[in-house]
Amino acid sequence: MNDLKPTLLTEEGLQRLTEELEYLSTVKRAEIAERLHAAFEDGQDDDFVENAGLEAARNDQAFLEGRIQELEDILKNYEIIQEPNGADSVRIGSWVVICEEGYDEEERYHLVGPAEANPDESRISNESPLGRALLGAKVGDVVQVNSPNGILEFRVLKIE
Image 1 (cartoon, rainbow, N blue to C red):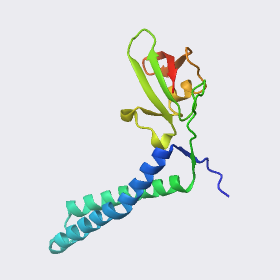
Image 2: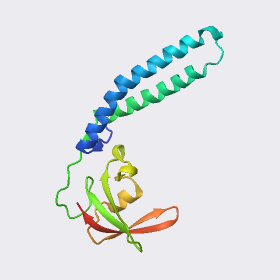
Image 3: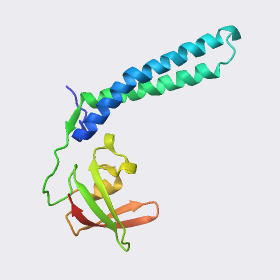
């Protein structure tokens, strides 16, 4: 029996992670295998002298295999986030528009599980400080977030 919490994913996130696993398992594995072979061949005449190319290829292989294992683990135990259409409070899967108190600039975020979080693409984890603060908030609510610079306050302007 699996006691681990399932990884929360959107349909889009599931597709993206599945495609990444396929790419890493096929294309990237083959590329690294070629690099390992070439580096090993190059190092044959060095009488086991350090081979930087071989070492780099081995490190890349270890990183790749770690990421493949991580993706396989996620895809063995996930739960699809249901899009919260018409929800009156912020839930996982919500798009939320917020504004830091005292500022005019609006920010729009998609609240997702940690496996999909990518701040550069406006996807924040429900486990991040801002994500935790926003969960359950309604339009007009002000949430507080602890930051290295003190407590920040954000007003919820819109839930999509």
